Length: 313
Image 1 (cartoon, rainbow, N blue to C red):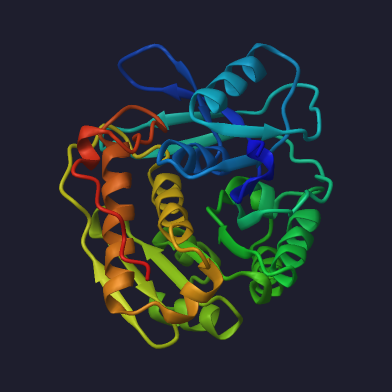
Image 2: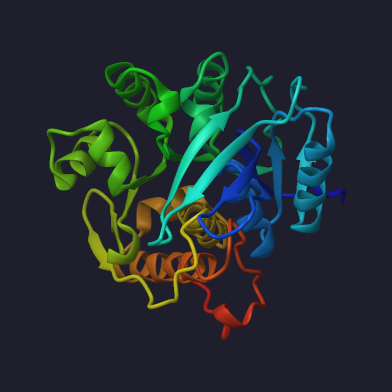
């Protein structure tokens, strides 16, 4: 059976080139974009994945195609841009990154959902016009078709526009989202007057069955409507944090996809399963921050050996 016809994860969203600028060296170009990084993580961990994105017709497009192919991601046809998008990521002394963007996100045609087990989107593609409305509609379409939907807002304040409009867009979409990952920085920007606990409670009331709140080196919390677990972050040497949250998200998707029925799994997640999923995602993220740029590990990477499959049944 051709790869495109097998059961797989489908990711929709932006691709771009990260121009990594540091205080001590020349800029280095590397593949990036939150959805692309998630797709690459899923592919490298061994889960079948396809990707719908928008690219230009230039040297950067060729580099992104090569990166996706080498990471076992099937690239599906998408809109053509005048030039491939880019982000200048400046890495500070602590390893944290700040960004400036040259990006556009057009509307993407509804994808074929045949044999799709999980659909993921987020970040710039979720918030930026003119494509954001189409992405939200695709989440609804997938959810109503029985596909598990996952969303990582991964807020870029310089691009998402006015906060109230961004929050309305998110909340209007939540009924069609099964799994939502939110960083502490996302929560603080979207809901500056609420505690993290109140933000998670609000989200769970509106539809998602699993919310993951990540806090970088402070670990993560995974919550359903009945259960909460707090998972510490593994110790690691931080080179930079580029792509860490995307690797965490991709590892979570990989763990959920390990169950024959991810949608049924979400109704049965207990404390042990949540803890295993969080610990696994943390290990993958820790391996990512230990290298430069968004370079998630492969399934057979020494940093993930012995390989521990999350308990999802």
